[in-house]
Length: 376
Length: 203
Image (cartoon, rainbow over all chains, first blue to last red; front, side, top):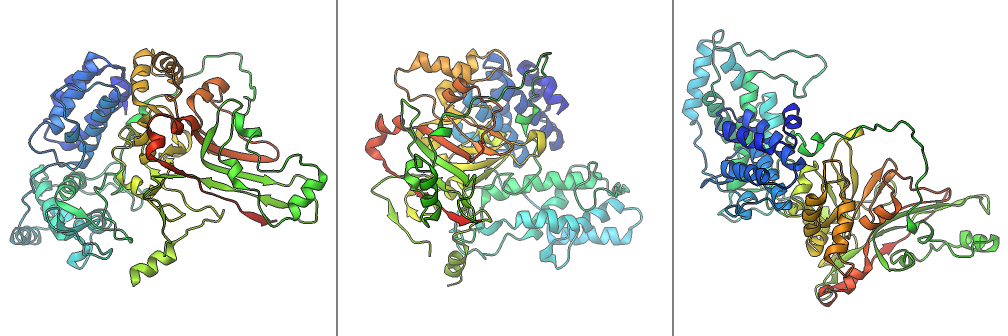
């Protein structure tokens, strides 16, 4: 967040950071740099530096034949490109379809079952000197293995389970209870990647105990857990590129799952913008005038005298809602897209007062296709 | 059989306030940057109208950035279908949407991160178009709920932090200029269906 604020209105500096860190071998660093760059792009005005910055990010993340699998990196990089598109800051060599899903990646190699067994054998033989390996193995145990490690089941397992076992080049399974992707494969990738990233099996790698955090993700995690998350972010990208998501209860299969769909923690680069500080010494609190429709969209009959109120309150019918849908501001006609109204009888005419709360929702569609379909 | 049973039991879903749930788009603000292009799921939800009308879609969706307190932002946004139809995108402020070319112009004119984009939008409006089809959809929120109004109304009424209640009636409304659907080729290719409902309850 601090880096993002430092980069505000300095796209030229951000370009240098992207070029310096985009090839960094710690994806966590790349994630954070791209987050700061995304915030910078959102705050920047159109300029040559902005075009250069968007181009640098596009080249680093989407310019190659395959896209980096890390879903967090992809997300922040796509925000940069989308914001560049919105501000007219895309250079001519950028292809919009390349920074929007679906992406292309090469399915990764994972450890084999025998390799995993060898790791477990190593650990059993040296439990005291291979604590980090032990924690890695225990933490990543999945539900489909018949047991669970907290992370393997409650963080990785259900996210991987949002994908089905059919590849994208196969017919997807349409049933809501279609079998999900085998989370043991995900575990084998996580084990391989955590060791590749440099986890020292001999480390103690003990979690920092925080009684206030409980099972939630602690602010400072053990090193092995950090590598597990990085590996999961990558594996979710691979899954998204190569496997269909599971259908919902209606049998509808989402086109793609975003990082938000799989409930990953994301920082919002838009929120980096700071609210302006007031420097006014003489504040006056004056109620602003009400919107123009406040007196127009009254669902009550007019004039609303005593007899009209009595008749209105005694009626079992509500007011005709159609009059609420096309208000006029005196000059032009408007169309209500959505509305909520609530009226409480100020002085009850009878012993029991009345509340009226009409709601409107407007649908749009082509008249040729429109036909009533009963939900059942 | 089970699927039919589940569908039957799921609809309609009425919350405690008797309001059927609107389509939702609960994402961080950065997701609005790519809206409506990366909102396929929201578009699918918007096609599922309460009236069960095949081929129809909601014109608004319920937005929340899932933050709390100071960083929270909630409001109505145009559905992906409406945003595509009107070629409007997020303005970068609040839950305000306007035309893409107007946005580009406002970015050039505005001089600083805190400049309200509605002002340049107004200039661009006068500069670019004779017809009133430019500024279509804007919005803001307060603690009592959400509403959306045209950006021109925001300018005119200066209601950046207004209250939206009277003694007897509380209401919110989202609107687009009716004239839009009367101009251009849209009226030729679209039929317009309005759906409303009212509820009466003794207390």
